[in-house]
Length: 353
Image 1 (spheres, rainbow, N blue to C red):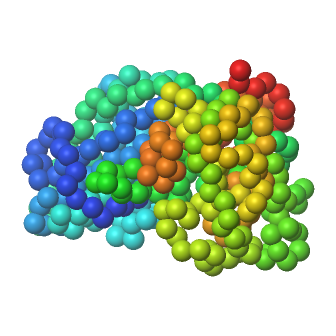
Image 2: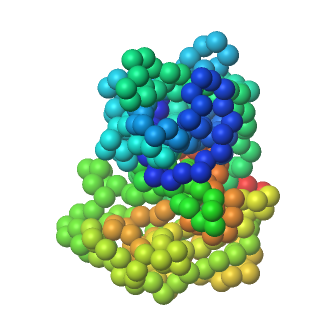
């Protein structure tokens, strides 16, 4: 059973590849990164993107999206539910102009992992009396194997802008060297709350008033440091703009990138300037302190954490992972990725060898 709503955003681009079956010859569908099933709260999270391009000289409207496992349909969106799913990035809802592309950000939790998913997308071509359905069959589903230790310690950490929700991470498409990537597909912004569930007490512009500010950031595995960015000034709390221009080099503020091996790289963003304790080429052990949570390149203090398939944090593709142990809802959890909004406790329990 699909337990979360589909999340859909829009991307204005073109030239997407075609691998479809159906009766609509001037619409192309492409799933560039097949879903990877990763264990989470209540089952297995699937999070991926479907690109749809209108090659007609007329407008078309997406009127329904259906995901099938065999003959069953664990997820279906239409009408108001489809409109709500489009609301984050697409003010035109399902309307696609000629030569325009849409990115459907699909996310849900399932009980069992299928070998394949089929997708059916229902359209109405402007001026036509009936809908036309296009099918994109046999998308393979893989399983995740990356297991890491949490990047923080202590209680009351909230996984904000996290997996399983429609936010600037899951819909954060970057185009680099002719390829579309979603670097923050499984990224999490960790904030820490007080007993009253507030992130700060007192003046919100003073970063020292945020509970997470100054927390130690930890290596999630035995790894090699491949990149360090320091010297970016911090912003005040609730900043409207960053201290430095938003170039690829400055995005994310002060950061550390770890090579975890096997094509995985862990990125830590928004660290305090001059708090970073490692340099490029260093070897670190699981649990080593890398730096302190700050507010460089960010509107409010938090730790942005992500795993990608390359060392450049915003030109690589986001990869799923699980934390070896944490506490959620007063219960110990092992080998899961936290979903958006979950409140977590990290301790110094089992670490990756």
